[in-house]
Image (cartoon, rainbow, N blue to C red; front, side, top):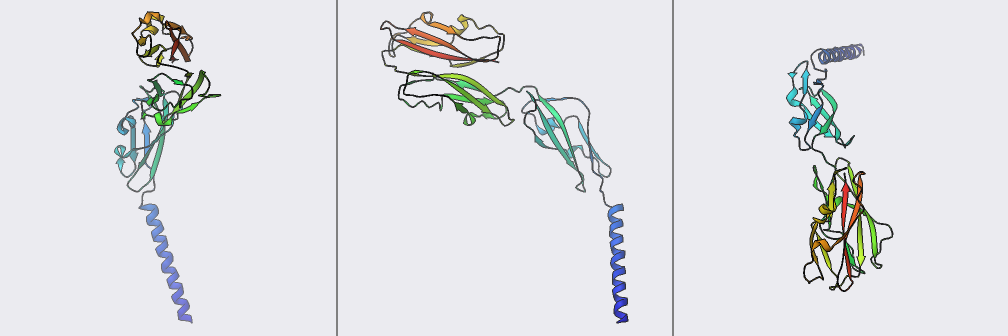
Length: 276
């Protein structure tokens, strides 16, 4: 029994010594000091298509064991927009002992623009016809490209069974969380082959705030006017233009192009103008 006690004590002492040795080695020999990322303090201005290398401009990283490890800095993620054209970039760097350092800073995009819409066809449908906007309204983003699939359309009291003009609120959000929206109008009409036709170059334009939008400029958007659907062309000067646009205030506005033929049948094309 006495020998057993001595053996147990010896084993305990050996384990204690080994534990102390390992603890001392871990504390004295292994690297537990995290590296450090330092910024030069200069604002970061880049394109929305900037590479990770460009996003890391002005940053350096050092480690007490590995030295300069700037080339190991990784862009971990870019946040959604925190202002009109700025986001937060998160960085991370590891040393050879897997110690980690993180760093955040703002980035300002020099060429960022809120997503834009296009309307390439007139939003006019016959009574009872399916009023689908698929293929008529598209959206593009400088970062994500074509984001038409993300478009959301809201319309109150819309019906395709009663003639009238129905307002639409169209919105889209890109991967940075920036939402763009416009207000457009869809027309429900009883249009026959005897009605005149007005075709516009496009049905949505963007105009900078405060920029003049003259009647001459609006008339230039008319592609063709016909007496009937298959009839002769009419001089664009015969078209009556009614504009609701106020270029001093941002928002969506409509311009109405109307022509009435000899049969007293009228057709109206609508141009949506977005003041940026």
